[in-house]
Image (tube, rainbow, N blue to C red; front, side):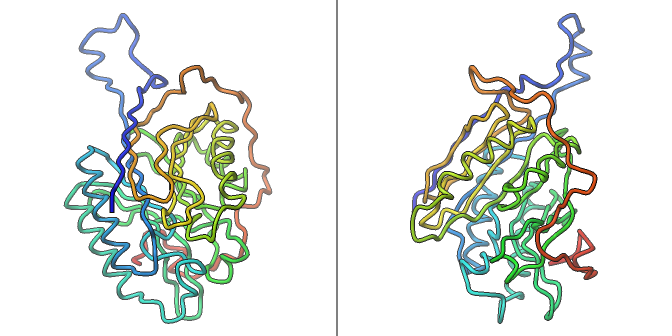
Length: 314
């Protein structure tokens, strides 16, 4: 199967630069930090070992592309309950943990950050979370984002999250989000309030019977969120046919850049801080702030110790 690689390296025109009269020594002492993000799409399925092989393949390609971080889709390792498989009854948690261990070991070997879409086990009586593990270049789980805004179907299989996750990597502050989060403007508003520059937003809008409103929704909604809150977003997806749209990067002027091919495996690489498109500009100079009593969960979070611990083992 062919694999598409798209590299769109952006000029960091919005980063603070030394003044024109600064000395060479001053410029050398204040280099502009950049974060090169690789984002991959592949046909996520119920075969955990196969998903793991895809992810490790892209980890190696990301390293070859000098990326600092690989971003994967929602449930990229576990598969997505209700779509790739029916439910978590008799789910193979042993294989999931073994494949996660292999990915963490390779992360350490390559010195690569990874945002890993998966499922996080709580206990036999409590539904798992739909999560993104944030794994550092030492192979450690340093944080975990649990999908906060769960659809009604999600709630049949998953426990909702109730906390946002940010991390500054190479001088760029990123925020983590999953799929339906994008339908709730307060998620992006809260991340904007926390100073996030780039949203790493993982989706699974795939393995469908054919076109529907999702073909239009995400490619319009994510750029709009970026325009509303003066942010960038890397929005990736599973490529399992029928996939409603292909992974892309959105800018705060509402444009899309670096998009992959629909229904085909691939990886795009984009460097931040990013500029705007040629002829683009900011549209919103007073982004809305979330209300003091804003709601940041759709579903029922748990107080399980394994959910409260953001660095908990899978």
